[in-house]
Every structure is written in structure tokens, then in C-alpha cells.
Image (cartoon, rainbow, N blue to C red; front, side, top):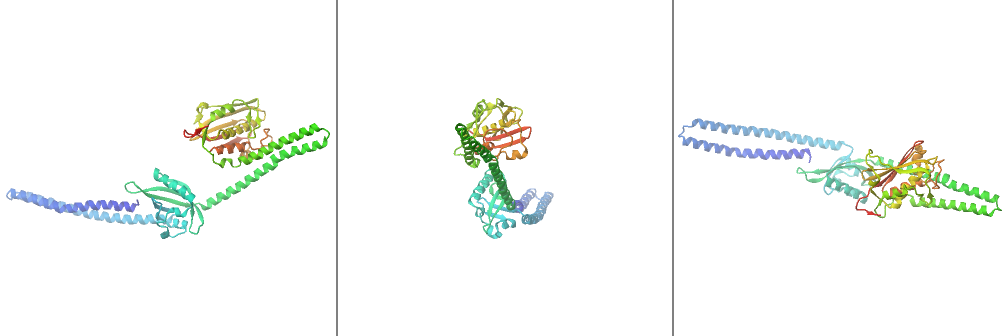
Length: 463
């Protein structure tokens, strides 16, 4: 309700009370007259003084009523002037702001808007009034808008900063950032919504351009990694073996052995290529069904000292002097002990891959093949975070940034033949479960990988 409407409602209440009082005054006067006359008759005119007092009271009542009436009229005039003045200021403010202001009823039909909003939609005010906001957006945007408005209606809490794609009269599209709150009447009943729209088209286009540039740069890095590392590492030994075979044609057994090694190398390379194709944007694909997994069971197996397994099903034995262990610090906020670990969302195979590939990277970071890989767990909101930390060689900021790109390998690191796909596949597996992996590293100090999973609830089906 606007300030003007509130003032008018208050004025109506005062008007009713004053009118009732003025209507009652003649009755009060007559009543005083009758009572006084009877008292005088009863006392045989010996109460002239009482009569004078009664007349005085009557005069005072009438005088007070007159004063109250004149005061009320003056207050009413001032209230009306204030109403007009406040409404004028209200209109001036609305028309002076660059952002679009709107009010709609419960159904979403425009009941009030300013000129800036009209410019957003490319229509004059008289063509917009009464129209529904859903007339200016596509199906997907309207679905998103309905959820937002419904949440504001049911909770009574404003929604701030959500994007809305608007289709103008000339069919061009602009992007706006919207904030919406609930409108209520004097009794607190919802009567509609009000909000602000801000044009963010330029910012949105700039963000899209930046994303395309980033994607192009990442593609160039991946291609460079693939050609310069994975493919080069395969072709070089093949070429060397061919040269060796040419030089030792008489030794059939050595020729067979070299061909066998070449075949093994090609098989691993093809496994890497096929795995990359399988996991490319794997994290963006929805799970076929929501299931939950006992992560403590997975960790128990991985920390038992048994041989680990790469994504290509190759065995990865743990170095004898490498220790894998789980730690718990009760002083850390949200820290969980091993027995407190919850079930998490996702298939066991994806969760195992995410953790196992990260563990292998941590083990490979030790140049001396000795050291500790420490795992700890904590809860943040609805997420379980496993921190896998090592004190190995660490990475530079540039290496850290590229470490989760496909086919990226750090020069000088001895490790398994995974063609630089381990960290990439680990992250895609976590993302497929609704989680993620974030890496922090300092060269010469070590690396910490934070593996995030969504905590499941009782409605999920355990594996």
C-alpha cells in the first residue's frame, strides 16, 4: 500500500469518528435541556443557578465540538496536501531511476510501472498496463520466473539478483537482473508483487565472450598437451623400436619382443583416448538414478595397503615407504571421524575413481618415493569434503591451474602411464556425482586436493 492510500484510509477513520460526534451533539444538548427543565420544575424555579450551569455546560460542549471540527478540517486539509505531495515525490522518484520498477497482481499482470521498464520492453506504458510478464519471456525463463515468484509468495522473503531473459517487441532479447518482493494490503494479505529490473545485457554478453575465449584457450592447451606429450611419448618409442628392428633383423626374438612392447604402448594409448572420449564432459551428464554410497567402505579398501588401480585398469602398487592414513582433528570446524562418515550421493564406481586417481597423483608427487598421504574429512552444509594432502614436490600456480586439464603432465614427474588424464578423470567423476575437486598447491611444499561430495539422505537407495 502506498503512503497516499494509507493517509486516505486514516482520514476516513477520523472523518467517521468526528461525524458521529457532531451528529451526537444536538442529542446531548436536548438531553441536557430536558434534564435541566425537569429539575427546575421540580424545585419550583428555585434552581435558576443550576439552570445557568447547565446552559454553560451546553455552551462548552458546543464550543468544544466546533473547535474539534475546525481542527479536524485543518488536519484533513494538511493530510490531503501531504498525500498529494508524497504521491508526486513517489512518481518523480520512480521516473528518475534508470532501473525498471514494476508492480503486478497475484496473476502477474502489470498494475504499475515506470518509463525505464517501458524502455526495457520496447512498448509505451498504455500498451504494457494489464499485460502479463510471461508475455515477454520464453518457456524456460517463465518456468524459472514462476518458481521464483512462488517462493516469494510462500515464504514472504524477497528474491534478489536472479537473471531474467526478456523478449522485446522487436523480438530482440535483453538480459535483466531482477529483485522481487511481496505486496500486502492493510490486513497483511498478499495482493501482488513489486520489484526492480536492471539491464545487464552488456555484462552478460561480455561474460559469454569471455567464456568462449577461455574455452578456446583451454582447447589449444589440450591440443598442445595431446600432440606434444601423449602422442609424442607414444610415437618416439615406436620410431626408436623400428630403427632398432631394422638394425637387428637377424634376431627374431628381439623383434617379437619390441613389437610386443609397441603393441602394449598402442593399447594403453588407445585406452587413454577412449577413456577421454568417455569422460569428456562426463560431469555435465545427469546420473541415471540417484543412489547413495558408503564412502567409509571405499576408504577402508583404499587405505588397506592393497594395490590401487588406474582408470585404465592397470595396477598401481603403493611405494613401500608411502603411508596412506586417515586423520581426525576435533578442533577443526565440522571435522568428522572415520566412523562418522555419512553416505554420499553417487555410484560407487565414480566415487572410487575420483578418490583413487587423486590418491595416485598424491603418491606420484614424492620424488623419493617416501612420505605420507593424509586424508581428513569435514562437513560443510550438505557437503562432505575429503582433503587429500601430500608433502611432495608441489606445483607452481601455472601448473596448478592446468593440472585438471586433459593430457596435461608435469615434466619430470615419474608416474603411471595415464597420459595426463588422472586428475581430469577424477574431477569429472566427482562432478558427475554432483561434487567437485579443488586443488591448492605450493611448489616445494605440497598439494591438497579437496574432494567434495553431496551428503545423501534417507530417501536415497543404498548400494
